Image (cartoon, rainbow, N blue to C red; front, side, top):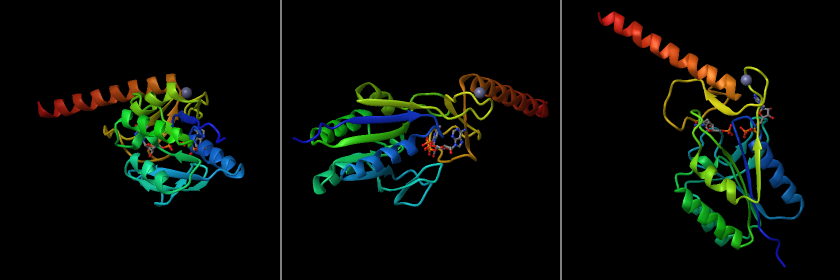
Length: 205
Ligand SMILES: Nc1ncnc2c1ncn2[C@@H]1O[C@H](COP(=O)(O)OP(=O)(O)O)[C@@H](O)[C@H]1O
Ligand SMILES: Cc1cn([C@H]2C[C@H](O)[C@@H](COP(=O)(O)O)O2)c(=O)[nH]c1=O
Ligand SMILES: [Zn+2]
């Protein structure tokens, strides 16, 4: 009888080890004789097309796809036992559709290992990860080290003032922070924004 498929979710802030864990999980499955394949969203332009690369420089061959439905298409044409998906929060598909797609894959005995951010730079949950958490067979919340105080990090702080939800980047653009360092930095940022507005206003007088 075929092994029962699982949904394994690796989540947390940036630099917390999600991609490293995805890499390790697929590596172990390959040793166990599983036919594995990894996917990444086409919006993730950080590295060359056909690779997922962790902040530690671990590399995984990957297929770049526009929609989660491309995985169903792929698995209907190829034999596959386990799939890995990096940066799941970037897929444009509606979360319900993604969950349906995952359930179909699992019905076909395909194990799914997902890596994705739980929250954006404003500490707002990414909807798809919120949907996947309760239905996961295994849910692992990883923690980076807070770049300010060395405690466990909670969220990814964006260094730039860009307000778009998606901004591809790494160390230059983000740093992981614990709850209290994040709250303090956001307050300081608000103060400096207000100060800039006051200065601008004064110049118009
Ligand atoms: N502040 C930090 N805390 C923990 N790891 C960090 C930090 N900054 C850089 N790193 C590196 O990031 C690696 C994790 O990378 P990766 O698995 O790609 O994380 P994620 O996919 O969660 O962003 C760590 O093993 C470490 O080498
Ligand atoms: C917090 C946050 C992050 N991003 C981007 C930045 C990176 O390109 C990825 C996360 O990669 P990692 O493997 O988890 O380090 O997401 C974003 O677009 N918006 C955000 O709010
Ligand atoms: Zn801290």
